Amino acid sequence: MEDNSDMNELEEELISVERKRSPKIVLTFLSIIILVTAILVGITLSDTNDSSTNSGGSEMPPLQEQADPDEQDPIEIEAEANVALSPIEKGEVVILGDPIPTDSEIGYLAPAFKAQLNDGTELVTVDPADGTVRLIGFFAHWCPHCQREVPRVSKWLEENTIPTEIEILAVSTAVREGTPNYPPSEWLTKERWPTDIFVDNQDNDLAAAYGLAGFPYWVLVDATGRVVHRSSGELTEEQFGYLIELGISLIPQIT
Image (cartoon, rainbow, N blue to C red; front, side, top):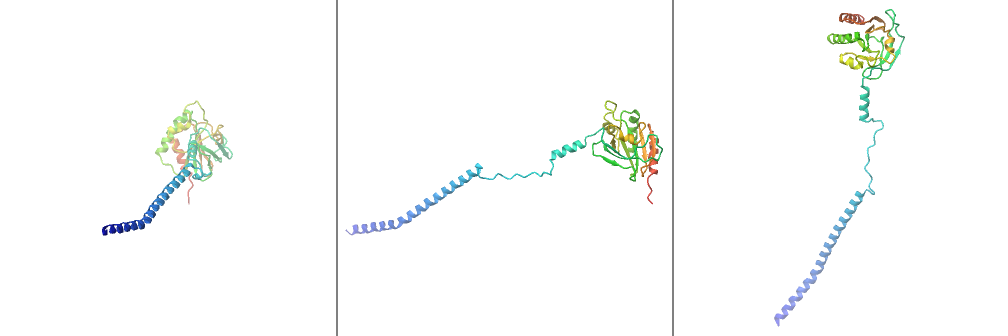
């Protein structure tokens, strides 16, 4: 009987222990359920936010950089540069003084002018009275004498040193399509003309303003703008060299 009594007491103790442990187990189980539920809710909300963002319904679109209205498109700049550098055969001319008569005496005041270079740049102003001695040659691409003189003078200028106080200019005038050496810009490039080349206009106003009477035509102007020498027709190397020496003698002496 004693054994049965002991067994009963042991069973009662176990039941008592189990009763004490049950609330803890339940609480632990509930905590796990709450934690899992919270995690699932968080994942659900995260997916919802991502879906809303991707749909674009309420998200502001990214700001686009506004183009500066004063900033020019690089393609347009390049196109304008190409146009500006395109060779031209005739251009705009503005005469800023009285023309030199064809039969004028030496000492006549040469007019200033504005004209374009044959590379197509904007108008360039030349003032014969600005203190620089100038030798200006007028050439026609179809003229046989010019065709011989241009390469000869080009070579002479390459082989000789010219003082910086003397400016040698060329003027392409009397341009005629369908005649030899057209276009003259290519002809003068081929002949390696080494100085600035101006282009006359449709009416050859620049040649007329300087009293041109035949081709080739040279005008030597001193530092005050007075005509010192004029010549029409082909020059030899010696004659051209004389013009350069005459120009050197006209350089103002600084005292």
